[in-house]
Amino acid sequence: MEYKVLYRKYRPDSFKKIIGQDYTVKMLQNAIIHNKIAHSYLFTGPRGTGKTSTAKVFAKTINCEHLVDGEACGKCNSCLSFNNSPDIIEIDAASNNGVDDIRELINNVKIAPTESKYKIYIIDEVHMMTPSAFNALLLTLEEPPAHAIFIMATTNVESVPITILSRCQRFNFNKISLDDLVKQIHTICTEENISITDDAVLEIANLSEGGMRDALSLLDQLSATGDEITIDKILVNYGSISLKFIKDLLKFVENKDIENIHKAFLELQNTSSDYKVFIKKIVQELSNEGISILESNYSGNFSYKQIKKIVFELNDILNKVNININPFILIEMVFLESLNYENNEIENKNVNNYMENVDNILNNSNEKKKIDFGLKENKKESKVIEKENDKEYLEKLKKIRVNNCFSNAKKEFLNNFQSKWQEAIDDDNIKPNIKSFLLDSKIVAASDENCIITAKLKSTVHLINHNLDELTNELNKYFEKKVCFIALDENEWQSARQEYAQTIKNGGTYTKMSEDEIEELKPKNKSDIEEIATNVFNRDKIEMV
Ligand SMILES: [Zn+2]
Image (cartoon, rainbow, N blue to C red):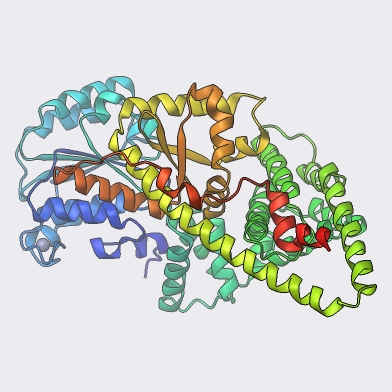
């Protein structure tokens, strides 16, 4: 039997099998069910996220003669002949980027479909077409025959001319979430009798960065020998680095254990490890620690500022186009330098002095027990209250700012703010932490004075929302006014967007709300370090003793 690569074998053949694109699937199915099919569609998004598969499922379903719950029946003439149907025309613009194919397409487009309701053109990698091919296509899109539907897909929407864009219904395909990738890899391994460990599944999902095709071709390669797929096999073959190695290294940095830091980097320099994968993993791990610090449940030695500094400098290394020396040498320098980080030293010294004082006081005091008890109780209380207020404030602030943004959202504001955003990124004088926020997020909606931004990592969203005032102040000079920002993670943004679309569709409107009513909930404006010091060590209380 001919071997079929996993990606082809498990290619979804119905809407319900499409993974991670719920919104798009729902909209496309609704279009078919309510008979509101447009003449041209554009599917955009990163590679391996299901654009072409979805285009095929969509085409098959459009032409099916007996729909069942918005899915193709799989039994009618159209469904059975779908793969060989002369009415489904697939064009890969990456390989046929000449004008000839498009010209032929246009000559034939007026001829009615031979056996189906519609003649459907699926054009993959549409951005690869030449300008004259685009012009030829444009003529057809302007006055398409009633029986023709165009479904175009691209990984690079910026290269598609605006004249084409404006004639298409556009759907953005998201990167597939880690959970969805893990689930699908597990399912396929069970189905195919591939033996694999849980941490190996997770590592494959991590390495494929949201692309199902990449995940499955990795799985194909790793399963070729028939042996069990283990984390070590992946680490060796794909230049990946184990989480344990990362955690150990961070422990060495925390403990200022220079000898072991150096040993670890010597090891890295001698492997084929990919430094980009390494940096991404380190940053992910550090941002988790950063959140623990902000949420006051952290027991390590890193300071928040130190983490920010390391993350920003590693990001700089990622952005360097040409690195002529071994990148791990640069990365090691970032870590070693962070050990001498001035604020960190001062902070540690303060903490040490302070702890010494506490010991002295406690040892010389008759009221040792009482003070001890008071400390613990107070620490717990203030932490809990502050955390709850914080959360409540942020949730309310999100609602208000999203609402206010939608109350006057316009494309022109969005374009304008996006270019200012870029201006700020390009400015070397901007504060490093703010720059790292800007690099890791993007503006997705804007009114005259509100901006909604999204970031892939929840930790970035968290950090931005805990530094909104600083962000506004720093961006004042680029935006030339005070803009109220709010960061949403991708899920929050998708549901906000759907709600907005629904409201507008139903003729609803958004009325601007005031932030005054939640002002009292706003956390006091302490620096992160002060906040941690007060929360964890309850400094005020001690000095009174
Ligand atoms: Zn059918």
